[in-house]
Image (cartoon, rainbow, N blue to C red; front, side, top):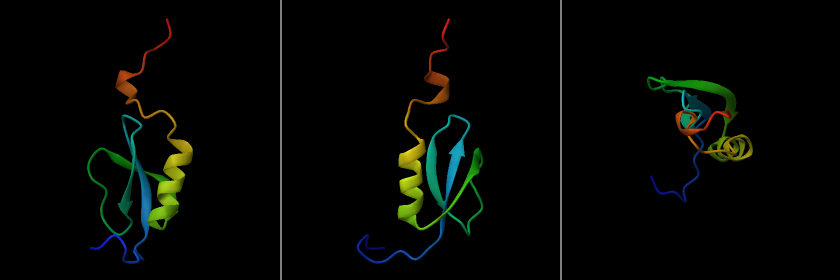
Length: 67
């Protein structure tokens, strides 16, 4: 699909156990290891939500725990 064409699909924001975020078509079953975050909307709305909440892209397993 040409990225310049309008995308009228509905997406949801998904998160995995490493706190990594992505978008997934709402009408498709989530892949193993991912859960819905709660945001549903256009591709841009979901990407905007991810930009607002996913401020540390370091995977959870790579983050240091304070001693």
